[in-house]
Length: 426
Ligand code: ASP
Image 1 (cartoon, rainbow, N blue to C red):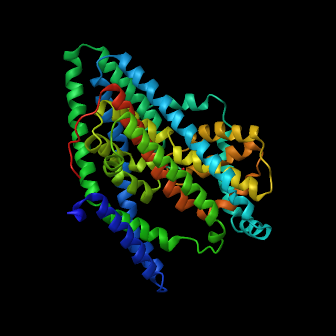
Image 2: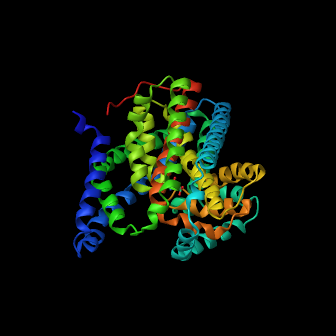
């Protein structure tokens, strides 16, 4: 029965959440009711997902790495993963640039609308700009330095330190490979069982997903700024969405060429993760579900998924990079600037790096966009132009970010011969 499928239940939750919020905003007390009595359930749902992200990475990555026969397979897989992440991100930025240069959404913004937008969202834009400045002040090797935590408990106590936890889990797994098997066994068995417990918890949390997304979307709708300016940005938003849709085409092509998986199978398998990414705007919060879907429904072995997906959630953001490219050129167009080919090529590089540096949380891509603007000599204040539609676009780009991670996991698994029959039907 179609309605028994999780993704339809989630879609139903989303639609009902939107309808409910639209009804509630008709009453003077409605928005407050939603904020006080509905929104907390959405927050609880996201918190529950985030709660298991760090234990999941630790358990599954330690198990995944230690299951590898030797270190050379780890480095081979690592090389392929990073290469594929870079290639897909570069494709995404390029698609973004082609779409925005062809359709020229910025040219349709009148000077009056531009000034109105600049004025209305100046405060919000300034806050993002100073956030980005703080990041730009750090040295060139800061990212590398940040990779190695000085205290694992401190690292594991902050969801933003996901890469540090990944680093620890990988070296711990390597340590396990390098000691005699008899000694490693109890530790491996422990993480094996620990991992099973976490997977069971994901199952339980996902049972509440339709209710969680109902609350999330209802809260989002009642809190959305009532912007008439929203409409002026429709064409720009459409360009981002067209670019993102083209990325989906690329993904299904990759899945069918390299992993021989049909588009319907691929999209059906990962759709709950996509819907959650859309509802939460956070690749990190979606990670537990992405891992479960990729392993059980796409049939990727855990050795691959436990390595590829946590890294992907933190550094591989195709949707974000595409959005940054479109947004940067849109702002330039709205200011009447002509970007040279050199500047556009520069955007390919900076948007790739900026998306890698974006945290997997809502709104992070917009902060890092400041860096892309600064490098291309586009006025940073232009951030105010796109603020009004950032949240819906964040929902869309996060969906693509997660789809990109799943595609790379599938491709790496196929190339390593590490695909199995999916264990779950829905
Ligand atoms: N929200 C996105 C993510 O979590 C990042 C972004 O803001 O683009 O993947």
